[in-house]
Length: 295
Ligand code: SAM
Image 1 (cartoon, rainbow, N blue to C red):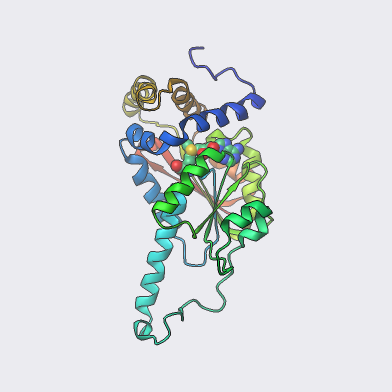
Image 2: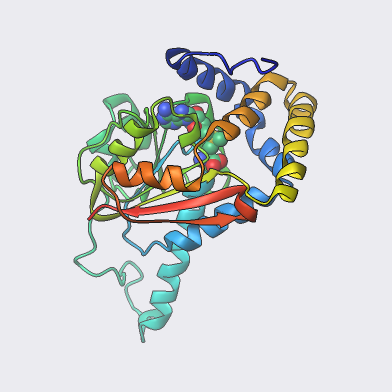
């Protein structure tokens, strides 16, 4: 075929995906804005709105790349905390500024130490030994995580995120250890999607939520033809112009077309054991948010 990756077998896919994201890591965020004309930001905002996490939520963001979901999560939770503080009368007149409104029963976030090897632990431990990480970003590609860490530094959020290298198909986390599992534009790249879904189920605590943002299928024929034209004609050109990488962006378009449609993917999520599975289309189904609960 005219697409370089269509004929590759499963074991080759993992390597190709790794190569693609290593190639694009430094340009990844710019490319996202350019290709989606900024729309990916709105989709991710919507995604966080659907998740609506409460303070104390332990989030695992898989295939988290450069941190878009993690940063939104932190901001969302901080906003919620502020609202709670405002709603607590007298909180602003507290004499001891170290006192917080956190209820004593707030579940403790699984500490980085539970997950990281010694080397990584040395990187992430605070000088006072306090562990206040709220979200773990797990990605198979170190280059993407490095870009994420740099962004976190600039945003002064480096203490709020733990970055872990790992495969969605074999997560380096214990059973029942997180309240929410998110994966945004990631599952499409995983070689065995069912394995990743089973792993999501395993690490979630009972009652925990699975939320996935992914490209999906456009059913409206008119929108679909415009979208096809844009993806096949424009995206690889943008890839070449901005990242000097036509092939990686061809892969992107191709992987989107191969991904199961809304209903098929919902069925796969059910098969992994999730209940109350539902989905919401974004931009006429160009993307969709799938949701499920471990009950
Ligand atoms: N979630 C981020 C976002 O929305 O901007 C990044 C999405 S990016 C399109 C896809 C990410 O999936 C890449 O960072 C890639 O390294 C990661 N990835 C691909 N296969 C993976 C796997 N098997 N396990 C974990 N991450 C994977």
